[in-house]
Length: 297
Image (cartoon, rainbow, N blue to C red; front, side, top):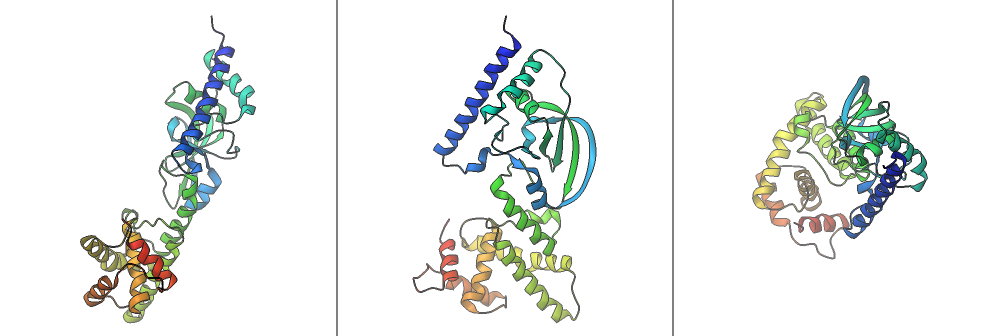
């Protein structure tokens, strides 16, 4: 006969080993340090922009969608909720022994943000449930609506990028269906792109003799400039690595840096494509950087 407390002790040791092995594999693969790190709830919500909150009641939620914590120290559990600290043993084993003995456990408390769950109370119960192979867990859920969405691939290193992305779409309010097309990989370039779009909007408002609303300007920019330029860059096979928005922004910045113009027509496009070349040592720092990026696939 195997006692629940003995099985619980073995379970804890097994999960601790798996957590340690995960960190070793992470280093051997040269993956970022935050791959196995739990997400901090408050930082994620601040980056995405809180809009609302409601009580969604008690329900079964998928364990693999629980990716973060409300106030637990990040070094105690990894992202898979394996115990990463030996100091968790006593509490963890009590919960595991209770589960193995068939003792009912209360629902955990979580916040839900766009399909991601953050534990407020019940970290040990989540950890034990995952170690036993459970797929779901009973939870008291509070849903938090945010201005920007997030998926399960979100990592701690993405939080600053999401913050700048949210601010960009507040300045350039494109419909949600189009936002996936405008994604930058450098958080600081969202501000640069917003400035270019707003400057274009200012010129359009002057020509129109009225203040054009941001939503109308955003759609005008997307339809009449972003989409056509992205198509040209694809056909020409230029722009460098990254997203369509990365390539578009490099092209737009070079337009002014090399041709000193805000105009945009076929002649400007042809002149700018012809001006793209490998960087030279005497180039302006920003020109050198953009041309270097455009050489990469």
